[in-house]
Image 1: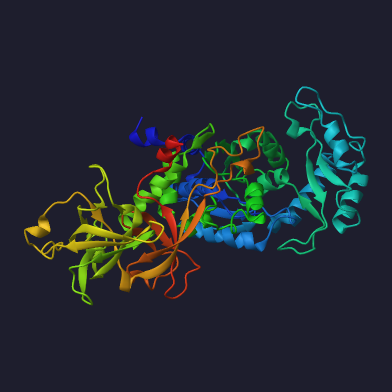
Image 2: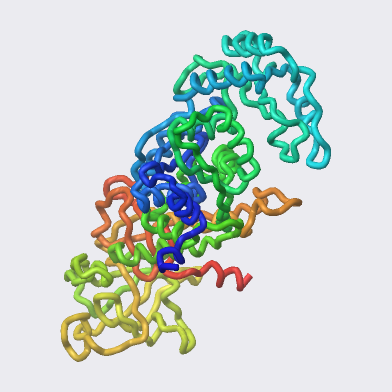
Length: 561
């Protein structure tokens, strides 16, 4: 077996076996078929990467098809968002398709099934139909309408099409086998009446096809060769194939459905219904809230398309469901941003430092490297003066030997600047430190080549010059849920695990290079983490979203609780 064969996942093995069995490579075609009833999430990203990745690997076209058969929940907003997300991930589709494109063809095929005695109109209540379905251990019972004449069924179905009946009063069912061990084969519903305007077809259709009837036939119309879906559709495969067999014409591509396992992400939910609840109840600020697992939320938070593609590649394709720790996703974006993000300095919890022996009113511009991982990123100039901000937690009046930041009598190096020594501190009436008084060594300037500039001290702090600091709104995000599997508890609702500290908004101060920034730009705030410019930014008033820290601190925090 070659190295390539050993590295194939089971989906690729299926394709290779089909090709080796005579399926023409030039007939390969894949598809990504989302329903436009919400925004795509990280689970969809894996499916996107799978299908479009196969298209790239096999030089085969991939369709983007919208499964738009439920006008009660679907909107053009979601169509636009899905297209935007797929493009942002770096993929191009061959054909933009809609299930609604095929409404007439699906209707015509349904009429043919009625003529063949393989479909009938049922006007029982949904409760009665469900009761007659039986159970996994007890066969179903025939509907009293199952043996209606072909003529009567054709008449009723045509009247359904004309809109003569109320919503929910009649359905069209396939006539298969009420005793089948697969309950999905017990005369499934193909059409229901729904008097709702459709986002593309308006009120042209008062009847809408259901998923099982629509999906396989859409694959067939588009000549999709392989239809990959998640494991919950495994039991649907038999019905998928039954419907195909009843429309198939010799010589056409007959799609093959195969299933792969979902990869669930810890500390979140990916059900569109539950995500919509979070939006409607104001737990988050919209579908693209940076705490959401939606692709648009991840993008707004600062995740890169490359990091999400790498995450999908890392977790791979499997036959069994499992829970992926969100730390892996964070690792992927941290690894990517480390290579790409410019380094800057910002202080999020400031305390003022006055360098008492630095000339009052003087300013100098210091050289700083933009990204040590990328030589082509170049350098920038940052201003230094008598008064600077450092992080409040970087100073202690008294500390043990393991505290390598600033303490009274101790020295630290300011990044790209000088070595300073803490001499004194000023407190307010409540004992809070308001200023730290330091002295600096003028010969210790970084990169100056003097012996003092190469003197080693154990601590290095980031800082920002007070007079030149840019005030910024900083949004620090944490996991939206405190539990790894918030919807995995039978006795508790997932909403009980909402993290009350998932968002902390503060005012920080950044170096002046960040005064004019653009939405989506990403930076490493040195020693703090990676941050992204939010769309709420205004000229001279940037807003930054924290994407991820420089290292995984969540596990350590949980161990301390």
